[in-house]
Length: 146
Image (cartoon, rainbow, N blue to C red; front, top):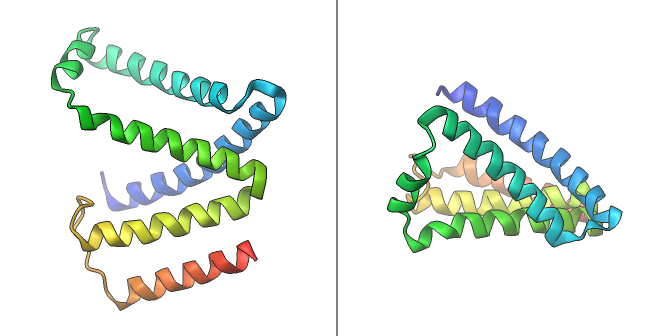
């Protein structure tokens, strides 16, 4: 995949996340509850991905996955569920803009740390431009929150 395709996907994902959290907050507001809303969200995602993989690889894919599973493989799912929960909770308590800016600022800070430690999979030098950009984003986040 090209860098431009990755950029477009990241932008689309950011927009989709804002829409997703808005819809999920509306579901919670209809009395469904946080946990039930997360279950609905996760179930739909699981069903869609399982259907795609069944079409792509056949129904035996699940056995192949489970043969390779390690206990720490659950961490991304737990972190993703926490992320979605925090987003929906934030939308309802703080509004979309404040929640998004706080999440993005935290993601950027952690992303810089992971890149600096060589843990992100991509090779990225952390230079003055990156640090200046991060400082500007954090300053912008502070302004939005205030």
